[in-house]
Image 1 (tube, rainbow, N blue to C red):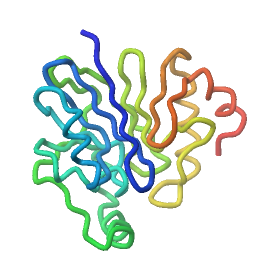
Image 2: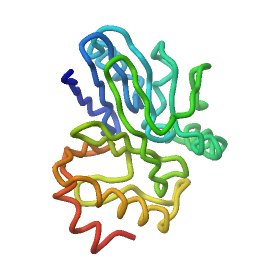
Image 3: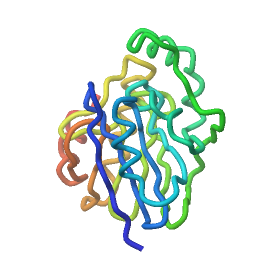
Image 4: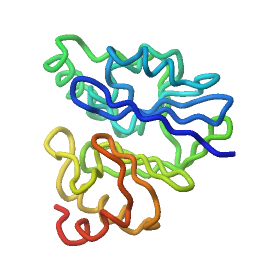
Length: 198
């Protein structure tokens, strides 16, 4: 079954939230803006299966508690939960609020007819993850068009270098949907990754 992808550029930082639907239900990836929740909810088709976080930074997670669905993220993200709480408080003036029902992402996940592999790509954060679908990749803040995510808020350069080089080995035709900015492809990003990653 063909999937539909809706991208919402969230205010005020420009973080991308993605709503992926199989026609009967949807998953929401990285809802980080409370003010954009109405647009996110309007874009959900059918049931809301789950909310997925590529990582826990507030601009990707701050609105997750406003969606009535279980939350999924990589288990290593919770190792730095206290740091993320502090960052959220500094940025938003309120604590980090997460849904009560939190699940650890497995190596593969299926919701309705939505199936993807979970690629653990630390570097931006310890538990940062990319989501690999048949012909596209959600990269969070690991890979952007022409650059990569900062490593000073829970990650490190060595991990980022390894993660980027791993992504560069994926099929070149994969469309990349990053956490910020416009879509790109593995083919477009592969050369600079191999020559210029950390």
